[in-house]
Image (cartoon, rainbow, N blue to C red; front, side, top):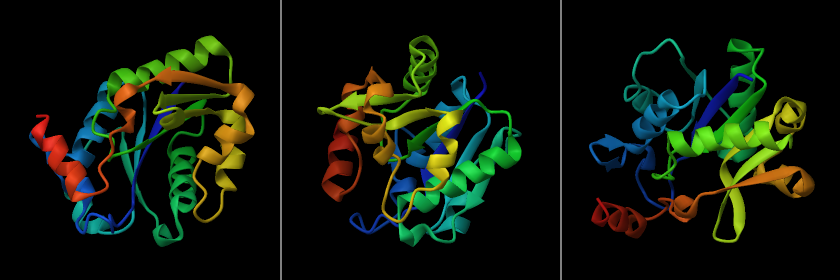
Length: 197
């Protein structure tokens, strides 16, 4: 089954006060790291959803045949609009994909191994969703199989795809990802990340 990767990078990082996508960790910014890990995984193609600072962030992306970008003009309306923009782009460039993974770029430890684990877990479990498990919750990166694409396209406003994790709780396979709880929302989060380098 071909699995596409959608990297959600449209937010304005208001709590941080600057573009978290451009925070540098281990020699690359967080957006570049997410794209690199996507390339190195079994996912293809890779779609990056931009919004706030789109023109600036696009300059950080490598030119590659499997990379596609799309701009979400409604990014201020919340996560649902970015999921929708990313999935619409994915279906335009790769209509045959059988599943998609949603990834955010502010989880610095989300890597190719996690992405591949999601794909393998979903395929072996015969469930509709595979989600990362951390801090007693399920979340991103998360993989959805094709039967759920229409419901992803119908999400509204601040709703993220997590809504479907609750709706289909019986149909979710969990992939352990202890460091998934580490995301970069504030200057203190970033300072702690840099100390771990």
